[in-house]
Length: 290
Length: 291
Image 1: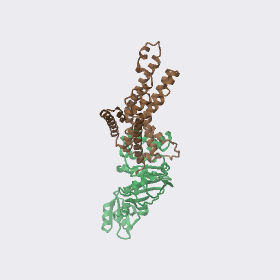
Image 2 (image 1 turned 90 degrees about the vertical axis):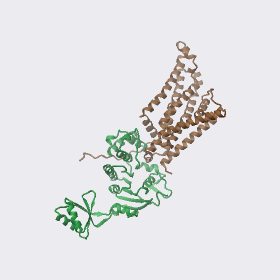
Image 3 (image 1 turned 135 degrees about the horizontal axis):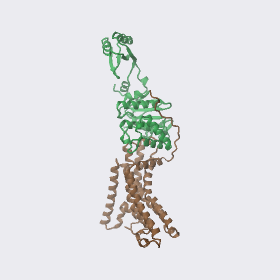
Image 4 (image 1 turned 120 degrees about the vertical axis):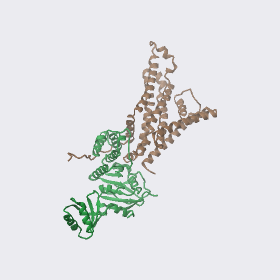
């Protein structure tokens, strides 16, 4: 069975999400870009360099955060990162300086001298992120970067990745099976299923606006407003975070109805925006499970 | 609002290292130095060197000085005399300490990296599997040589300094070469066999047990064959005894255990070494390039 079959892709600047169920071939694609997995046929070019022939040159400009948890007993985060920098080719002083800098950036500054075996999963994820950005690569590959993290840790890691992706000249590829992660960080998405690309493109373009669907938030009195809207034949659905509602208006004059209902209920509309198709529905449609 | 936001600078430096395996060696030695057991083992190896140092001083200084009251004692003691076989004895005894140090240092060298998922990280940097394997091998080889060849050669140098003269030089000029050759012969196969076990097994403990059991089994087999077939040359099947046979030739030691040609012993040692090297390289390559 082939892990990847007939995949033709090109990644540009900014953040691109690789979406797919477990075993879809996301990690294989990333490992192929790294030169760890050799393609049976076809061509792979990274920074216009032929892979895997120029793998070492490519790895000079590339950072990789693997999926699996790492550890290095008896070694502190600073030592580990200094070693990574030295492997990259930095001088001892440069490597040490960079190690401190990126550990501060990923908010591990306080624990930098502790042995890595004492780190929590979240801290080890940060170490993995730190080693990936240590040499300031132009292409970053993140394989399931939020694996095993609690909600707060997940948001922190995603914010860091987002910040990195916004740096000029940096491309980021985030592989994940968690749609909200990809939506949080990426502007482009590639959906993979059973080793094939089933959908790709700009997230905004893939998730067009619904006609007469709105995301709204009321100042207060949500229950009365929603009841009134439902009584008028509109469908209301609670979204996350909890005080946001998805309203599917029955007629064409939806916005007017919402404001009138809010006025009748003695409250105000504090947020209103046309709702988009969810990435989840696009993904399910792409993998044929709609 | 924070007064500043944590960020990191753009890195414009040029990669400098051409020999990345040296970085691996440096890191391995730094990590090993953090283990107390490792330091104690090195100290144990050092004690034997001290004893030999005292022996050289006793023979070259005290036994040569007619005015020294201890001269009579040392001049008549065969065990104190400095000759080629003294260094063979030194290396032969040092082999067990060297083996324990290499076993302690090397049994987890590859399997721990695999188990801790570090290989992916290392190979995502501009480090080739050759650099990685060479780094690990060289760490053990340098460690082994530092407690065998290095003190051996230094002791020969000291012997020549304490007992200067053409006679000493003529008798001992080939000793450093023999020491180097024998040290390489004991260190390289040991390092590669330990790394091969580390590469193939899932943990440091398994690797340690396997290599010890393999040695015990090999030596038992040699003893059994020699006993059953009443032929001492079958002792050459034992890896340590095959090494000893080569050592006897290198140091012109006349106290031979068996008379099997040293060529066969060398062939055996080289074959085992190459097999171990093949296993190490194959495993490390597969870690970088999945088949």
